[in-house]
Each structure stands twice: as C-alpha cells, then as structure tokens.
Image (tube, rainbow, N blue to C red; front, top):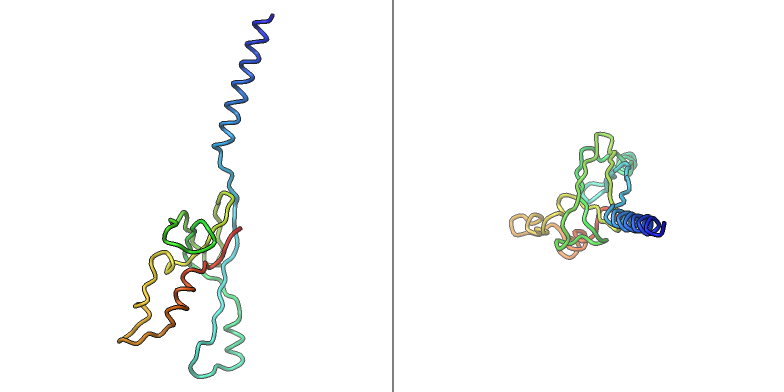
Length: 143
C-alpha cells in the first residue's frame, strides 16, 4: 500500500511539473480589431472654403493601408517589425498579439528616415527636426 501511495504521489508530481512547464511556454494572445480612419489638413496655398475644410475634417476609412508593429512605445530601427496588417476597403483590420506595449507604424517609418526624399533641387520642403520627431512617433501605441 505504501508503494502504491508513493507511485501515485510521484505521478501527481510529474503531472504537476509537466503542466506548469506547458503553461510557462504557452503564449497568451489577444485579438485586436478596429477601423483605421484618416482626416486631411489644410497645409497652405489658396485658402479652402468652409465646406472644403469640413470635408477635410471628416474621418474616412484608410482603405488598403498596410501598417507595421514593433515592440515599445517609440519607433526604433533597433526593434524589428514583428507583424504587419492591412486595412480592408472599409479600413477594418484584425490581428493577434501577446500582452505588451507595441507601436503601430506606417510603411515610411519602417526604414531609416531619408530626409533627401523631402528635398528637391537643393531646397528642403520640410523641417528636418520636425521630420525626425514625426518618424520616432508611432501612428498609434497599444498598451
């Protein structure tokens, strides 16, 4: 009877150890879904009408837009892209991630910032410091 109790306890102990190891390696993920929209802004030139300004301010689906995800709350080339997702024709998306803090970035933020892209014939059309701040800032941060 004593041997039987020892064997049962041994089996329970092994079962408990195996169960805890399985749970440690099992990654919990969350389903995330939503809708990406965009608005436009007046950026100089002839002043638009009030109707045009109202139209600019309306949120529209960001259809077909591909986004990328890096860990952390700042865009950095030191962190690899771990996932990408594409919004459908209505701007809707869905993906899974384990718990954590993530940055959603745009395609132009995946690679090193190329300031020359905003420069034509020796004339810079954007403030370099402003561009650098924009590049570091994610489109959205997931907590």
